[in-house]
Amino acid sequence: MRMLIPFQNKMIPVYFTTENKQPTQKVLRLLTSALDLKIKKGKNAIKTCLNSLISIEIKGSEAILHSYSENDTLALSLY
Image (cartoon, rainbow, N blue to C red; front, side, top):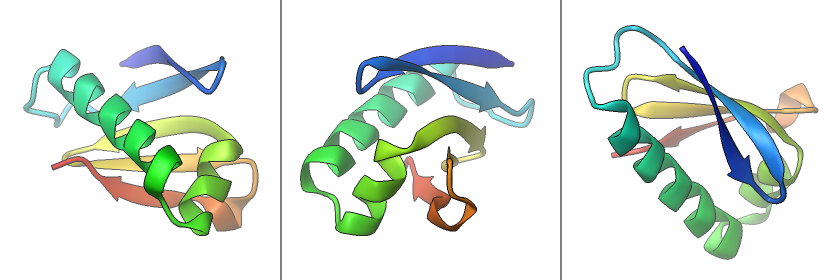
């Protein structure tokens, strides 16, 4: 399943796998709060990834953040 979320004045696609057992709205709430926290208080590596973010993939309890540079791709725990 694919959804779009607003982040830093652009729409970012979020892809869900069928193995997620949590409700979609709860996962999206956790994701947006984690992203907001990381953009404000995160380290430089996370901020670099978030500034060039192109998509997010949710696998279980992790969010895989894909950016323009393959080296900046990160995994972020949601729980």
